[in-house]
Each structure stands twice: as structure tokens, then as C-alpha cells.
Length: 242
Image (cartoon, rainbow, N blue to C red; front, side):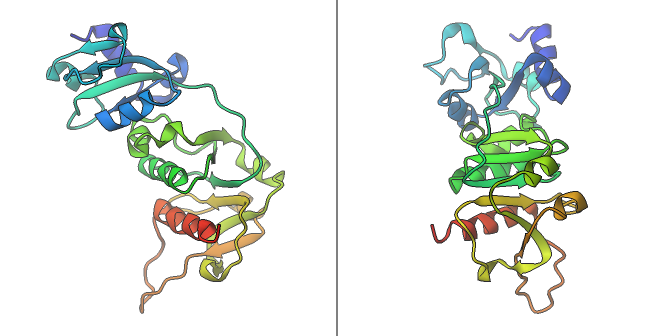
């Protein structure tokens, strides 16, 4: 059984201010939880309706009923398990290599997918403007499918960070140069913009290299690509020759 205090704590973690206050976040589903258990992120407690986590210490595991899981789950259809993890200490950012920077990305699914893409393409550093969606939002955690433990994510003043960067800056714009014809370096910062408004004017003024993904349809009426889809194409091009 899950106590009222436990229910109150877990459900409060759906809000950023309580995640920061308690330094905790939660994940749901066997695959995501197993990925996090195998990482260096520390488990606080695991609640499960099926005892299929043999290696979890008994004092950190509670076998609960489906009804209890429904009370603490953020999913419309709860999975079989939910785990609380301690938010790790933020790591230092390296100013080299290939870095993805997000300017005001607000959708949790987009951030989670972009983080998975970084993991897939071997990009170990992702920087986010302070107004981007929180990494430990439960929907972001679900969308990362465990990649959250393998990519270093840092929130910062993006304008200041880009203005002092020592590597080339690339931004995605509708009127940029065709990415398929561009000479792309092994090292640099790729800036992806907000879902509705793209890259902000302040950030745009800093970026020297404007790139775009051309439209090939006859009518060319599609307004834009989803930011996560665009990130996949851009990362593929940057990594293609290396």
C-alpha cells in the first residue's frame, strides 16, 4: 500500500518547483526504469505491481496493487511500475565537440525525442535556454527512453553562451543555405528554435551559419518541420562524413 504522504510527494513531482525542492523526479515503465537503474542515477524508491526487479534492494522496493499505482501515476493508462530517482548534480559543460542548443523548446515530447537523437548520434552535450521545458518533466523522462542518463543537459543563458562560444554556430532557418550542399564541420553548435516561432531574434543575430532543410514537394506548401524531426535530419547530415 502507498501512504497518503507518499502519494502527496509523488504527485507533487509533476510540478517543477517540487522536483527542485525535493531534488527528485519519477519515471514509469519497465524499460525506462531499467535504463535508469543501470545508469549512475541514484534510485530513491521503486513501486511496482510485479516483482520483476530482483536486483533492487528490499528497502527501496514496494510491491503495490494496481489501484495504488493509479493514484501515483501521471499516465492515463498506468504501466506496471513507477520509480523515484534523485536528480543528479549538474555536470560541467565542455565547450568542444558537437553540441545541440535548444532555444525555447517547450514541448516535452520534442525535448525527450531530441535527447534520444543526441544519444543515437553520439552527441553527448545538449544545452537549453532557461525557458525551455524542464528535463525532469515526467513526459520528457518518458520520451527519452533512458537516454536521459547518457547525455549531459545544461540550462543556461543561451545568448551569453553562444556569444562566447569558441566553435562555429549553425542555426536552422527557412531561408538558410541548403544543408545538403553545405560543408559541415565535425565540431560546432547546432541551434534549434521554438516550435512556433523558431530561433529568437536575439539568438539569430549571433549566428553566422544559416542552414535550412529544403522542401522537395511540388507545391512546397508545408510551413515547417517539427523541431525534433528537423533535428534528426540536421544531425544525420553533420555526422554523415565523420
